[in-house]
Image (cartoon, rainbow, N blue to C red; front, side):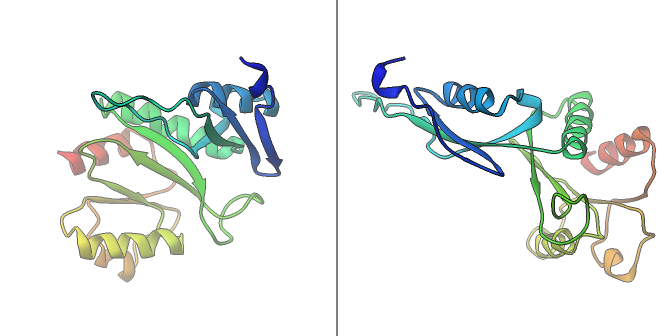
Length: 188
């Protein structure tokens, strides 16, 4: 690392740290060192993505910036479970964690929201007790009429959830095998 880049952590907040490096991985590594955390305990937001040069174009040598923040144990466990499930189903994707607004969930904020990114994904898993999630599901149902929706809740189905026409409705607690079957059927 050159002398001009000795300062790798830009700012630390209660949510995490913003760091930089010659690559995204170096910036993440710098942030992890500052937080004293490993990759499974954090979420990474890329602030300045790496780009690929077009033929005849030079790549910029600018630094890459990321914001890395800790996720709580509940969110990390939820992400790990979903990643395991999707791996078993051979669905190539990336799972990230964020907190919604509202009062549901731990003292850390609103409900845990697991975002799944990848190619050819077409499924929504919803906790209908989350007002944010329910509003999103209603918008998606209007826009993507045939989008499979799976509801997972501690509450039984309601008139509102029935309007979503869910492919499956699982009442918590449910077995992993039940969720796997619902996913396989919805994606069938």
